[in-house]
Image 1: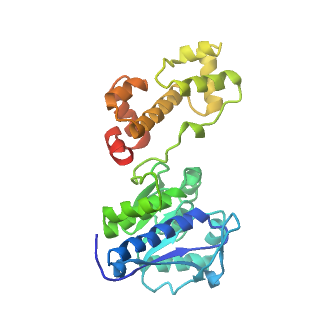
Image 2 (image 1 turned 60 degrees about the horizontal axis):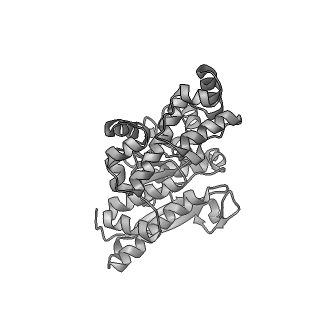
Image 3 (image 1 turned 180 degrees about the vertical axis):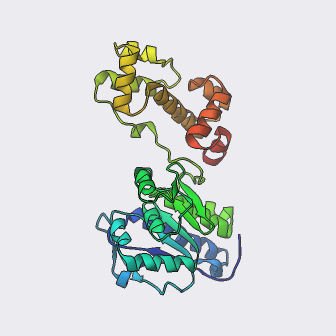
Length: 327
């Protein structure tokens, strides 16, 4: 945390087809931090937040929402934080050599650069994350890795520090998490937590946390017996869900059941059971005061150590740390 007495400039790049929340999320975090600092007599340590576009044209989002913007500043002007949001228009921006050149020069004069979602493609196009580990929205991770082989793409974390002055975030709400982390770096934990409360955020996630997916996001099988097996697993995560037991329920051989389940759901039955049990344990860590041993037994893990290993492998965080952060 640093009290500089100098207002920090946050410049958010806008363009036609930008994703609204990629842009507005970080914008709101830094703007709300200003309210916190002003109320504590520290307005001089706050942020000036601006959306900029080529020619100062409105930044029209992919949903048709138009956001007022300023013209691109001189890229050699000092910038504290340059934010590169994603959106369906990102490929057109990547093809604009002048705009990519502006990003490259502006990044050289910025204290830090933040990409959100497919904004990572802009950072990569400008050469800001060559030889670095970066993340982006999970749906675009393979494409980013394919188009920029010099970048090591990790699709799991919600945000990572890719270089000394460059951060990349998974996208959409993850941009809010990253902006809160930067406010914490600048002004301390109390400031970041207060901003999160004012924005009525349910939880503030650490960057190493994986891009969670609850069961509701899991693909639903087309065949009724496979859907029934999914429903049985989800309704009783701690039940006896061996492949042989599930296959008997579906009136299939274990081998045939495993093949159909994997084809329709996208992962093997055992992996699916483990995922649902981990999700059930996650919810109980949030919503109950039960011990980890009790939760592990109830959710079918058998032991607290088994639950811990699965949690770390799937979510990138231990059950104890998860409960302290999100209960």
